[in-house]
Length: 587
Image 1 (tube, rainbow, N blue to C red):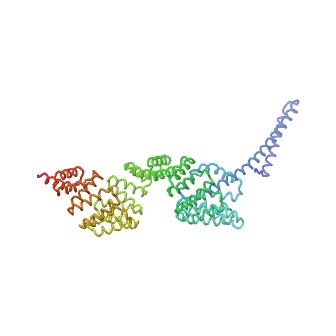
Image 2: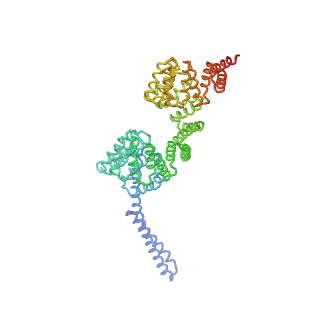
Image 3: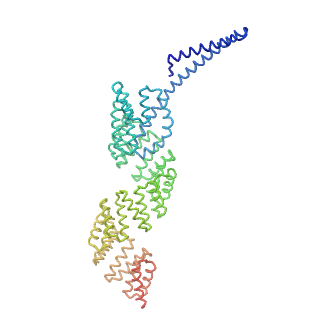
């Protein structure tokens, strides 16, 4: 409401007297017959002006009163929004802030401007300093006034320490943020303001969650809910904590409550979709991501997540459509590039996969997973040097991932650097002790070094971890074959074929053992099976050619060696096949 001081009224009286005197002089200079009418008109003018001025002043008072009401509504609404937003975990913080940013920057900013008029001077000054970022100055000033203004000072201190905590949170110093939020909570309790207390618990929950302390986060969000049972964001965040702990059922319960309180809450639908996806309920997950997108059409993360669900269902084309839409909406969303690259990879489109992985690395040069995935694509192309460089970079970036070491070991193996391959398989096993494939490949490296006992020991471990691991049986058969232990070799090939009847290599290798034993009929039968399963597989043609030659079947032998030469690029074995042909042709 507008208030005028005594000097204002003195100025008004003097101004009125001057106007009356000036007006009288003007009237007296008129002809006598006009003076009476002119003076009456002048007095009427003054009366009307005074009435209008009074009415305007009353209107101003009414406007001011309404302004105070609007201010209280907007400030209260702003506090509610900040309570809901400021403490969300980082991914959700960004998404939610993006939804509310226009509202906060618009109406809420106006509310702050009006509220300066309605607060008392001391509170007003401290709030102005907080908005200017002079947090420490506010803390020092408020400390001096604690005795006479306990409640108001506690409220200001709570807000100041909340702001200090926010600064640390945004700088990702979550442990320091937590310390300031604790001080804020203590001050808020002193002020008795329940909404600030709830906000402090909310902020503490976020800081705990970002540090991976999900049990603590759940406790703080539960305290928030006790004070603010209508706060959908608190249920959503507690759901995130349950989700991070792998308790998807309880996460779904909390997300559902958040949606009940706030039916248009896109982020809660997205999060509930994630929980359903991890429960392998992909149709439900897709429906939830779809609802999130309906509520928020520019929700890039929801498109990315729906793409993941389609990918899990094997619908790679639809997954790519969603990843592409996510990228269109948010060109710096590195997860979408990485995921689309993985999908292209599974389609065998390694070139496009490499393009997407490279884009992800370009956006985030320390993105170890993208280097690793690109390495897989290069390896699938047979480009082991580039694959090695990417695996090396992923490991250098502290990717403590057994697969990275395993795949780099594969590259070393292809380079015939067996000691280095074994060293990487050792690291993979250290990180993942039940890594059957790493034991199998380490066995291969030892076998190539001629260390058959160590090779067999590694195959044994691989089979112990995976009793249905056909390749390990086949490889153990190879090691026994090298030791001329033909019966054990055949027994292992038999098991490999039993587990994987379509394995042409196992048939070929068992045929080679029968050939070495002089059992050529059995050898040829196995080579026939291998050729039937894989007509472009060169090895069985060579082996069958030898078996036919040993049985005196010259034409069959020549035909097999010629077919081998058409398929094989191995110079050593090509030379051996040519020698057989010369001998068979009598040259």
